[in-house]
Length: 206
Image 1 (cartoon, rainbow, N blue to C red):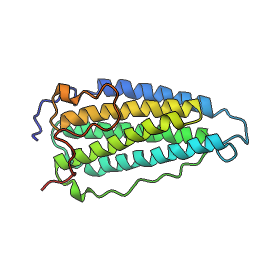
Image 2 (cartoon, rainbow, N blue to C red; image 1 turned 30 degrees about the horizontal axis):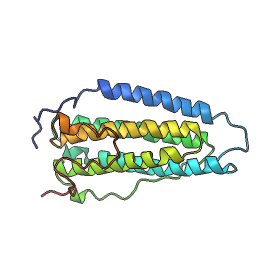
Image 3 (cartoon, one colour; image 1 turned 60 degrees about the vertical axis):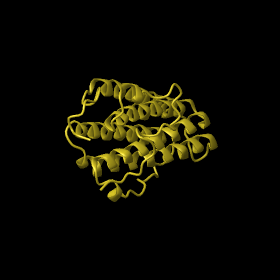
Image 4 (cartoon, rainbow, N blue to C red; image 1 turned 180 degrees about the horizontal axis):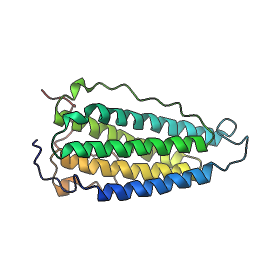
């Protein structure tokens, strides 16, 4: 996969910037909705908020893992793909910040840590793109599962927004992996089951 491939929208920051602005607005709403609760009614004493804080901590761990992967693996990307990887890393860091604020707004503690990463199987550009795809897909699946189970409105709204963000990430990663415009379009009801172009693939490469 050469660095001069034609990728619709890769390298254009306008769409990503607009999405980031929307996410920031939702994060602010989370803080307004959660940060003004009465003393003694936080995650430690309110089972519903405690459940939500634990779920968001799980999501936070996934986002931290994705950020770490991009930090360690973006050097494997060339040409127009490197700024793409940097932008995805930036957005995933914004997701980390939003989740951290939401957890604290619930009165919870941020306890998540990045998961273990082995980039030795993602030595090539193609291998790393497949790894990034799987991390983004796992995050989308998690938010689709968590959103209807969360008890409070603001975390549900945040989870829905982050699901949309990861769905957009998967679209550009499909293009980076060689998908055409039509193939890169998500299913009408994106469910995180869409495999990368060419089907399921290990993040390998010689």
